Image: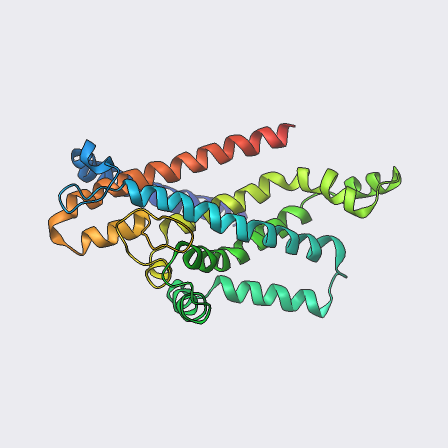
Length: 272
């Protein structure tokens, strides 16, 4: 009976894995088939016009949003996780409260983050529809993900590493930054990769905070659009469906490139 149950569960696992892989391949092929024929030089012109519907300004804005959001969220998330794992008393009510709040934030729909960013960053602080307002909103969105993945990566570091460092006379701060963080860096980078994927694919929150301007951003307080918003704008007009698929191809390439580069960096850090 145990062998039959094991065979059934193993077969079920392989079945769902194959189903997931099939769906992924179908989506990629569908995007490539419909988007590659529309990849023309006019899509990469420096300025957007109704004739070329260039995605180049949106591509640069996407990179800017990713960089600014990570600069805000990554330090806060990592240092928060360090406090929870290395400095706080295990099992304390404060730690449980912070974890509960982080899990609650991770389950809030993105449209709610957009409304909050619109009311707080855009209206209350007077930033308007801007790169900074959109980046701060996305930073709040990805903060629970970075914090939780970093926390789990720090917990995965064996306690003998810390004990060996303490035994050699190192303090807690040096142990954290010279022993624990380098050992946990692959897991931390995995959380950052997932965060980048969420930033690149986000649309609802940015409509209310970043805006949907087709021109290139000129600073932190200017409006723009990311690649996902560019796709939304093109698909809302039935005349540019092919160009929207071409934008999806570029977005897919960007995400795969970021994941590949991050995996290489994580491997080098782990080997070091």
